[in-house]
Length: 450
Image (spheres, helix red, strand yellow):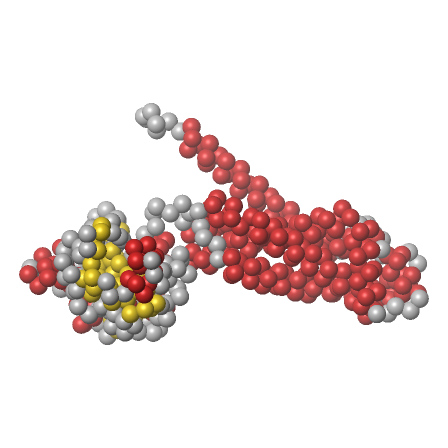
């Protein structure tokens, strides 16, 4: 009954101060949504291929041309052999070889040119995939075997089970058999091929030419499985010293990048790079902080306006504990309504956000992130507001004639309003600078007609 009474009073005060309540609720909802989008987007982009069991130990090795500074995704195949042989830090390597386009046929039916990846026997140990049907261990062992994805199997054979065991033909082999049907890669993966086949061409060529010529061939993407707790910077220096010392390839500087960073290391074609995404996330956090200050200021303002009500309730027997519980319940109610509004807006705007920023949102994680952020926000507001509420309802303030003036500015309100103003000035200055940069780029005379 007491709780029901508290809730009734909370709703009455919500409707009594309509404008302030609406500003608090809508502002907090927008802050929650912006930071949720930023956090979800950042986590999505920085966890590409992070779901593989050993992803934290897998690194991609690439080269930087010492003359031009240009990145090279592909390196000599012999490098992988040398690293595995001479460096105890390297547990295993796997390679993705050069792509060769090829038309597949099933009988007389042409299956077009699927996205085919040429790999080695270690590939599926680095990047295991759920197997729908067919071989599950040591998937590819011979050159006449291929593994295909669910989408490929459904497109040409209706079901994965019907595709299994079918014998196809491509431009290189007259007879290749589908031995496994794999689940499609998640959207947040760089491994998006339709067909996987063991490489023959690059490895055969390696055996036919000298070591010196092999070091000049940049045709293989190399992934390393490193031992735990390796100092990556020290290991980079070690392998570069090794290359220079043996005079293998003096023109390339070798670098290592974690598996989850590969997308943005070589993603020059991406609409938004990681710097933009990180900036968006930080901006969302600053907006949420600004909303916090505004929320608590409006809440305190409403409480000061209710000074007479609080004194009356204190006079008829309500103690400090009751009054504080009432105020905390009202805060919780405001946050709860903001959360519900944010959930509705999230559902309505998620599609537009994905389209506008050319990304994929994980809907289940998006809502769970909203719940977590809303929960942390509620807890933060409770921790910040509790001492302020205790200060307000102290007996001496309520019993003294006149009580607390609604126009009184507490130290917290002064600090929060100053910080809020600083954040707003930061946003305005950033917008002004970006506008000037865009204007400069649009009107700069480049010396030719665009």
